Image 1 (cartoon, rainbow, N blue to C red):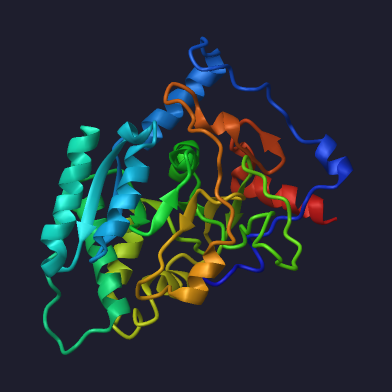
Image 2: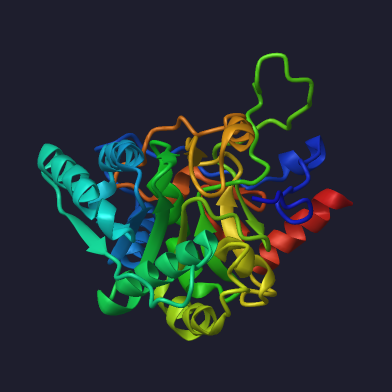
Length: 338
């Protein structure tokens, strides 16, 4: 991915600005009674996150799929989503299905295996165009054919943080009501680890695992989109895009096609995914080493009976995401930049 050098880096608050941050009391321990405000917030999150699909995209890397499914199915809050694996290479279906069956039996949970039909023969298609066709098909399967309210898309070479789903749970209500947001991502293109690689000579800003930001640059690498956005805007544009338009990748098309111009994605300061692939269409040796330098949250999952937003901060506020709404967020950034 290309780092967003404009929108994804929020200025760090000055001491004066930091003292004006709205602070809420810490969340109660698991099992403690919820306050009325926490109960209301949990109800909002639960309603907004209901009927969510998590789709793992795979092609022919059974070992990668196993590692990703092991991580996803180990999440304490994974029962909140419907889990799918989508595959697009017929000769690999059997091996990939065996992985799904193994994990399904080991975890005792439902995992649907989706088999994408081959694309119509029109010469030899480019690999990136085939990947784009797979993403379009899988998203339509989840959001149209199977009627999910939103879908989280995760490639098979992404490792997830323990609190991966908390980002989406917390942001789901805002994604549903804020027309200036079109997606939520678990990735931060500038989210390098503060530790860095041994001997690396660079300065990296301190990561804040509680902080959520906005960006007009699509982050990808674990992201959620609502069914309304897919059906009304993205899918029709995707369907009409030429093979040439997709030849540089579906994610580049999303960034530069104009489909989401003027709107943002929410994302965490500390990434909730890490790219671990060493072989594939887009990432090999040097790129893989670069991804190793990124941070990954180590915070625990938010219990399902607690509102996820309480552990996050945005726009100068802690404990809710009101500071992530467009007007409040812009005012906060402008104040920090003065």
